[in-house]
Image 1: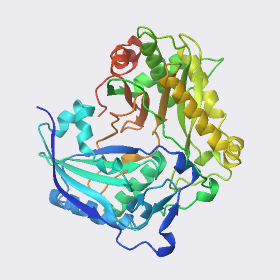
Image 2: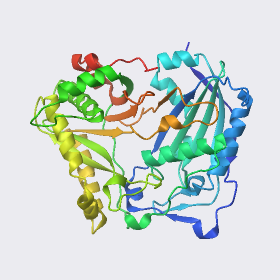
Image 3: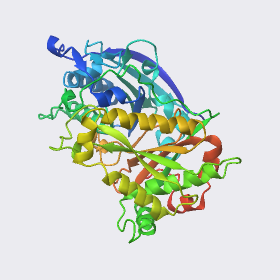
Image 4: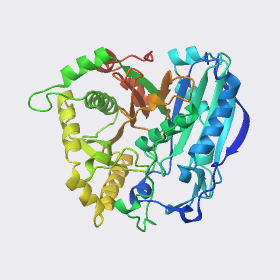
Length: 432
């Protein structure tokens, strides 16, 4: 049977206290302004509630009440954005949907996740309508067994991965009844003051017919073997798990793309999402809310690069992002120049002159700590059925493995998933 998700109710959740007048206009930073006008989503799966103190029919009530409370601390999320300059903190609220899931059991989804079905568990419509756009949307999906999938969709204009994790964990802490809730640090616009970006144009899409999203699991044993294979004294002797996994996926995607009939590309670029919080002087706290991530480019011109060579490219690119690099982004037109270079690469990619991939690691952001009072998530994932050439890496529940969500052109994916090297280090079965 196929998954069937039926929305039963919709409610607007507003902050429990009105936003003060002096906070009503939240100025976007320049990094926010250059962030893509798209939504990022997570789906958190929870088992049937066996805790007698929190009955199943109380879950939604607790989620709504705690969401109302936490929105007073993350007040921009209850507003709208329209002109890429400000968030109007008008307390319009957040849409909260309740849905019933039938057709497949929670255990079946966890054992064999199908991205096209999982996409029904998040509500994205608010993010693509004309005019002022919502910044946050919640969908609580209840299975017949009593399990829950919490689909959370947030605008990239408001938050990056670190901020997303901060919001989720603070919301969960309020739901649990914790007495001390870390206060987010908002309004750090002065670090990257806004500018006139009226000429800003989001990335265009490649002229492809169909995008396919699939999951690949790297367990602890396979990661150890992969890191050993990716190690090289002349390049990187001790690669991280993220570097090793990123290099393997990049290599396999590169090979799959170049075996396409008529392919003549000789340049492959991987845009790495880099968190600037720890690179600044002084370093920013992880409580800093907003966008503090940028894209930096690793490039190879080799026709068949070795794994350790790609690891070397990734490490070298990351090491360039230091406090001096960040200072240059903050002055004059440093950030604009970086953005324009990314736009240029994307244009060349659309023209077929090079391959362009985006690697975004969400490892280490503690998403699995989101306990709303009925235990930590069994599994957390994200689905991308829109944008091709995206590799998203997340921690497995044990914190040692890596789960990769890979989105490619349908034809390229067919070759990618059959790569013997990829098969040797992965499975398509979710980690327990």
